[in-house]
Amino acid sequence: MDYQTLLNFVPIPNLLELKKVLFIGPHPDDIEYGCGGLVSELVGLGAKVRFLIVTDGGSGSFEFGNIEKIKEIRKEESTQAAKYLGIEKVDILDFPDGGIYSIDEMAKKIAKRILEFYPDTVFCPDPLLETKNPSWPFKYCKSYSKSFIDF
Ligand SMILES: [Zn+2]
Image 1 (cartoon, rainbow, N blue to C red):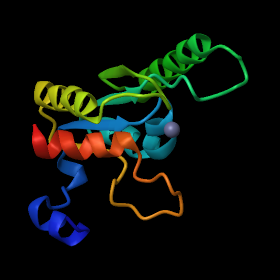
Image 2 (image 1 turned 30 degrees about the vertical axis):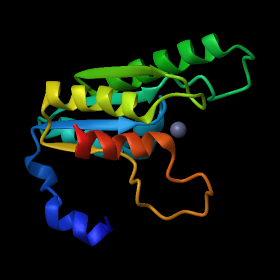
Image 3 (image 1 turned 120 degrees about the horizontal axis):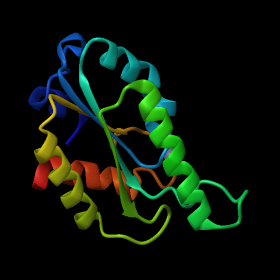
Image 4 (image 1 turned 90 degrees about the vertical axis):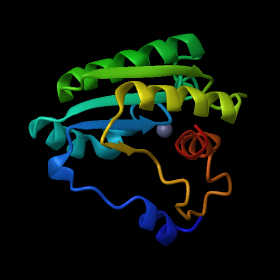
């Protein structure tokens, strides 16, 4: 499906009227880094905002030499950033960052969170975005799409 066809099905929402918003990000820190300003504005306007981070962030750094330590640090940083931004809930799934996992299993867990929260709008990386990165779209983007379409 091309972008224009998608827009015909799902129009761009009025951001000022959103009451419940879910941000889905691949790793801890992506949402804050990519759209922290928007998150802050939405919270300021009274929206309930949740973060869903789909991988454990274990491949985020080689600095500590210990994946468990990296996961712990990144989870704590996301939790602190969420508190600062006024986020209602941060949910971090346990899919291995850079590891092997099922797109279907991730899509099911994303769909479950969407159905539980029932947001007005979901923000996530665009799986149709054209980049020079040969591995785009990443597996998690395929999971986002699948969670919206299949479940
Ligand atoms: Zn990332």
